[in-house]
Amino acid sequence: MNQKPKQWQIDKYQDIYKRAWDRQNKIDRIANPKIMPSPQAKNGHNAGKFGKLGGAPKLTLSENAKIINKMLIKKMTVAEISEILGKSHRAVTQVKNRYGLPRETEK
Image (cartoon, rainbow, N blue to C red):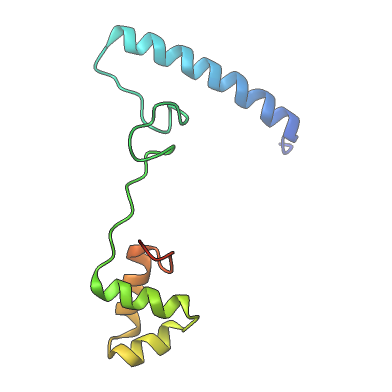
């Protein structure tokens, strides 16, 4: 019967596995110099201009997104915003999700 591993076992083997993975990556890079580690594999070290996990930069807000952002900051619901702007609930939700709203106003 399989038992769920204890947290100390997980921690112990994660470290062992990571060291083995790093050693194998070094061997692979020597064998094929074109292999570049992913930003996640770099574990935050020199991960490029998009941050620790290599994520994309935030999109700049469109005029429509700026209006929706201001309304969300004022604690309005998506239903209220869609009614005021004359847009569908789905359209407002898509803008909200696409731009990661609400967010602090850009200066």
